[in-house]
Length: 340
Image (tube, rainbow, N blue to C red):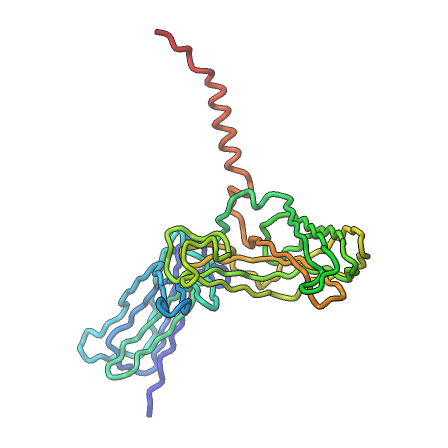
């Protein structure tokens, strides 16, 4: 008769909230052993890694270790390799790197942080139990992207092979930085220079990821292949829509202009904040488009950021510091004139 396996439970001090870079993760491992167990030792392993894979056939896999820690919390001392029955409690802690990326998973790479408990058993398969540490971070972008008012314009064709004339589309967005679940109004200005009636406008939302086959010292900030320092064989891109498109029925007659407001809500699924590392550039996009009687749906794409801005960028503390320095310099008076 086989002996029942021990029950291993891993818990963190934060049960439902994610951790941020620089945080200290504290946790507890509880092992309940109802019968004596053949075991040499018990080890708690903590590690974080970023990786990309299957970008090309020469660099199948690239991994960057963010941290790695291992601690043996129990070992058989009598040489019998027997773990007595009973309950065992161990604690652990790990400090996250100040620059670690958030937890994410994509088709060609990802980042994850895990705590693993391993029971080494002689002449038997080891027992392993693991739990993932959820990590997020605040946005690391220029403050100007969080300012009010941005406008995107494009001249769209009303068809691919047979066009009835151009259509000018201008969309004004309140900001380029959003939070998941946030609702904002987008102002469309449609100038229909074609002979086709515009029946609908729409907004689509999605994520876009730029992967490297090898880690770079300088992260890429864009999602096109031309701006990447690596060759096209050592990079790849992916994008896919998240949630349903938001559409509005309109009637923009041929050779006319119309202004329309379309509200849009950032999907709750956009949990991973925008970020850039030497391996991955992760972000989001919005597509603004129109629908005519033709099958083609002309659209334009804009890169946006989803996440939380740092406190200094939100409250303007940097500006306050500059004002204080200026006041100190002015109060001290001008330096004396130079004289021989």
